[in-house]
Image 1 (cartoon, one colour):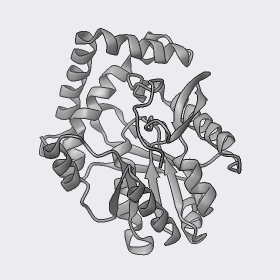
Image 2 (cartoon, one colour):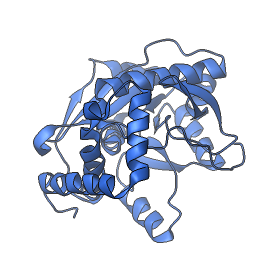
Image 3 (cartoon, helix red, strand yellow):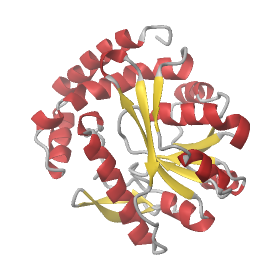
Image 4 (cartoon, helix red, strand yellow):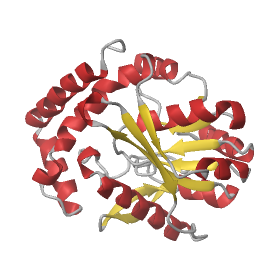
Length: 272
């Protein structure tokens, strides 16, 4: 599948997305409820069903295949200035569009000058899948940190070296590793890690997401400044991050994973 054209993968992905939607009443209800919480009717965001399938099917190509076309939409000198500050960068990306592509292209472009980007990930429970994912992300400019205490330390070390780290702050953390904070007006359990990394290191917070272009023409990497100064109060800072994620999602709600269980009860886990 990594050798297939992107257009073919996306065509199968659309079919897969709609098949999943048709087969799962729970999935259908979650998409409709999450979209309604944000003020959208299903008709407004129904394209997200096909985009979820595209995301799944394009993954082998992004992990193991030849490079895909990526256009940059980044303010002039933004990344150079952020790296030059020497305190590192925290890239924050919601479950929007193609979030696999963002770290890949940033890491590849800036490896020689500023070192790799380290991304946080939750290790797969199945050993065979974990091994596949480890191989897929073993590429120049990209390092991975598990969602454990050792992984957090790895992120901090990268920031101290002035490097970049990336994470999805709208991913629901285990119980004890987050706080309840509004998302589209409803409390959602939200990780504190992104805010803590920025507060403790002084790193530059940036927002990033990969827009999937129609007709398999590739992707657009959008990177922008965090819209305000990060608060020193943890709960306030988490709320600021959630608000920033909301604004990104409203840029392209058709490519957001409305089927993600954003409001679910966190699973048990020890506090980091």
